[in-house]
Amino acid sequence: NSVKAAERSTSLRSEIYQTIGGDLNDIYAYLAFVGGWKALSPPEVITRKRAVDKAMYTYRPFFSPELFASYRQFMNEAFEAHGRPGEDARIRSSIASAHGDRSLHAAAAWEPDWASRFSGETNVAAQRAAYERFLAQLARDLKV
Image (tube, rainbow, N blue to C red):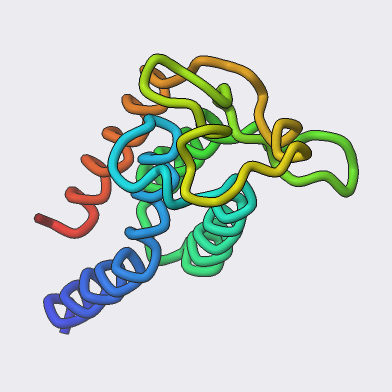
């Protein structure tokens, strides 16, 4: 029955999002200096990126092409993914902004080598727009 198959597909997409939604929100909060950003270190943000990427690419067939494209757009705005071989993606943000200084206000003691994990860009408006597009497309995919 196609109705039951569609319901199962929507349910599976919802379960996948429940798995990655918190990590995606943490990434966005860190970029925007909002919410719980102070609780995260740069390595933790990169770890969350890897976890979300793994889930999204593993379950790609279950999402619409539009959702996956909006996800990739957000990640492209959030991270400079293609650095030198063997290096992690860099966070497309600065260490400090008018909203806070990660080296001073974070819960964890700042490690000097973390500075290399940032691109130094101010990209908050594009990141917010990309994140909102992703969430809007997710709502369409989940038929919310």
